[in-house]
Image 1 (tube, rainbow, N blue to C red):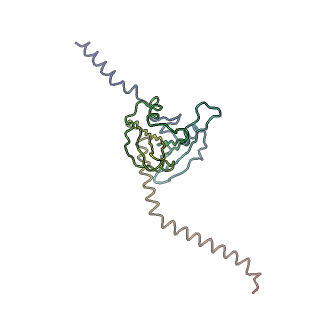
Image 2: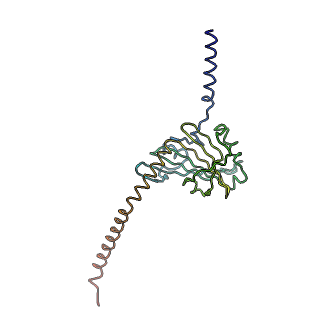
Image 3: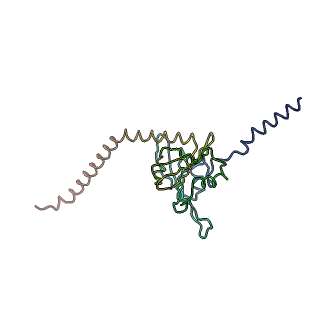
Length: 232
């Protein structure tokens, strides 16, 4: 009886551990990994760290880095990715947004994306549902249009991957994000926008005052040069 119970327990543990063993890594994309530092991502993409652009400095530092995979001369499979945008929250990669060359993906369907990605990420939890989603600014930057649908989605407790499709013009985008850091980054960006709005009048007043001071200094310098030689 004891042996039977031990065997049953072993089988149960094996069954429960199956999904864990087979779970796919949703944090990785082409050698980049969500959570990696800006320096590590720049090194992976062979980019200078100084290429990163600061979006916000407060209340938290948010930066962006763009990477364009180079198509190798004579490559059998031309590069379909046009631009990859990395977003960093406090120096850590929290979001990867991929835009594709329209000519390289012309005619491809959502199912084609799922087939290509399933080898790395396993079967999606959501596919071809045409479920409407809000349009993040990152998609607008890539001109994917305003009518977006989720074509496929992979997710676990920490990470999320979405294939997003626009109806017209037909285009696809890919987004990988670290769920909690991305949430914090969006909250920080909203807070920064509020601070910018509140402080805008003061900044404008300072700008106008600085401009007036420069004009006065220029007039004084011109007067000191022109007055001694002035003749009416």
